Each structure stands twice: as C-alpha cells, then as structure tokens.
Length: 245
Image (tube, rainbow, N blue to C red; front, side):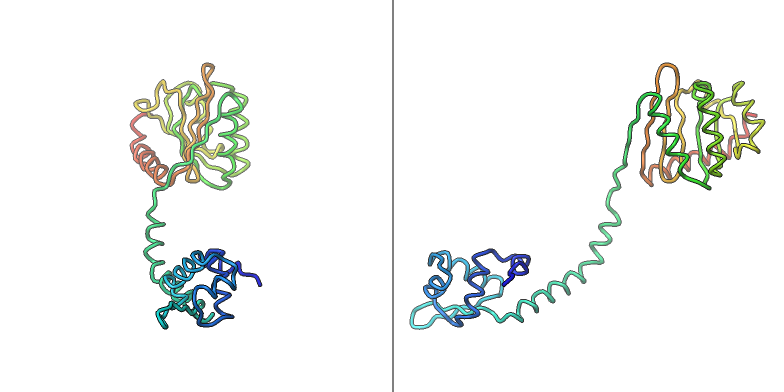
C-alpha cells in the first residue's frame, strides 16, 4: 500500500502504521496496537494520542482501561475538504499580501569595455519601443565606431530614442540628423554638463553606462517603481528642455 499521501497530510511513519492497524483492529487497547505494529507500547500510545489530537482517533475508558478507535477513511477526505474551504476563504487576503510585497530591485554589474557593450546590447533587445536617455557627451566621444554601430542597430530594430544631453560639438552634430536617426535631442547643460555617466530608461529597466578612457562600467537595474520614478523626472525635464537650444 502506498501511504505517501498520508505522509503528505502530516502523519508520521508511526502514526500511519497505527492508523492502518486501527482500520483492521477496530476498537482496541494500546497493547493490541503495539503488538500489531510491533512498536513499543509507549510509542504506540504517543501515536494514538497524536492521531486523536488530529481528529483521526477517538478514546474511551472501558473497565478502567483505555481503548482507541481510528476514524474511518472518509473522515480524512472530509478534513482535506475543510482545509481547502478554509484556504479558499483565506486566499483573497493572501493574494493582497502578495501584491503588496516589496519588490527588490535586480542589479547586474558589468566591467570594462565588454561590460558596457553587454549593457547596450540589452537595450537593443526592445524592438519597436522608445528609450529615454540622459546622455553624457564624454561617453559618445569614447569609441566613436562603437557608437555608430549602436545607432545603426537601434534603427534596424526600430527603437526610437529621446535624449537629454549637454551642448557639445558631437551632440550638436548628432542633433542635425535626429529625424533620420529616429531620435529627439534636447540640451540641458544644467543637468548633464561634464557628466561622465549616461542613464537609459527602457522596458522597466535602468541602464547606467560609464564609458571613458578612465573607466568602463555598465549597470542594469530592474524595478518597476524605481523606473517609473526616473521616467517622471525625465518627462518633467523633457518638457522644460527648451530652455537651452
């Protein structure tokens, strides 16, 4: 007989043996249970007591002796059904707790040239969407060939981009080609000037890139609340971005 289901219900090995013996024995004293299961009398008694506490055995006193009778199998099914009913009643509250759980951000770090390349490749996966970016001119000046490859792949994947950046020779030259590059550019020197870090907002992720001669680093953070907060900051500055032409 496969008794694993009884084990899954929280019965110990001894309790299972006692219960099965009880189905065959009927009303019996502890000694009879012990003999049938080949357990020590004290162990048999403890198991019967445990079954009683779980509602799977009953006890009567007869001629100053204790006798036990185990519950019929359908009682087990009834108890399972009762537990299921109680769980269904509790489920809405549990689901509310699950929805309000704190979402811990996922953070991935990438070092050196290959690191920030990995980050940019992650950005390029979001085909047919829009990327928001705070872009440091110093990052664009580093590895210009790589930057042109990124722009080409971005256009191939129909990824539009809005960038807030500082006014420099390279950014002013890039802005002239905004339309054909699927890009919109606004200058905001008060925020970006002389910065060494670029930030891209996309697909519920933030990507930070440091790409200069001194340091190459990429960081990807995934957290819906943090991303939404950064989007609000970007959109607010975007509306104000006409200050600096």
